[in-house]
Image 1 (cartoon, rainbow, N blue to C red):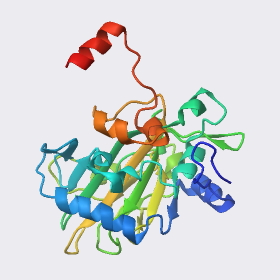
Image 2 (cartoon, one colour):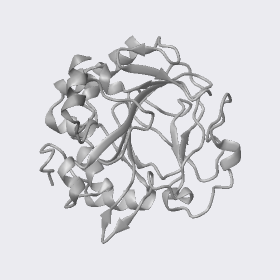
Image 3 (cartoon, rainbow, N blue to C red):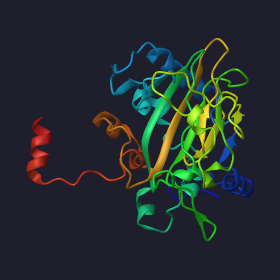
Length: 290
């Protein structure tokens, strides 16, 4: 089944629908080609020198203050290799289905919106702790199905840009925890803590998601997730694009650059900025003057 708004997009098949509902995630094997991976890795090669808070154009180096590695926020500003991930046909139709919104006002606007997109580079003795879970009940990350239609607040697409196997600091999830009603008993010892190495190693019920370069993990943000600590040499390289409904706002306050908006296709622009600002003539005049 194709998507009328994104003609090349493929909707989830019956198996993907079932296991996304059951587990809270699906793995998309071979989502990116070798050529696409070469482009994204070249970008990360160029930006990995950035220190916390530094900028390269409209991309900012960011951390949470712990040992989670380097986040390159607004990575779609880094050029075409990451721009194409905004509406990549390997997952965009699946994201639309799991978010829901077809046939509503939101459908006119995509209904998608990326509230955060970043690449992450992580080395030995780095990881991210346990976070999220259905027990929290937050609107932004909620999971719901009504009349066999999905209505999720946040769908994440995590792409492996290098192989991620045992010892590589794989993403970890607790399957079905997007439906949990109670707090995981290991939450306190494994959750994110500023300034410390926190991981999901040893968390009961958690599994490592091993990916080949180019594979993608699509998951609802309500699922409990984090990572194992990397013990192998080298770098774990991923990107994460977080999709929500068009009425959402940016997680960290970033905004797309005018240059990015000008060069994006209408479909991509609708995801990056679903609705253009509505301004009075005096405000437009000020903006032009500046």
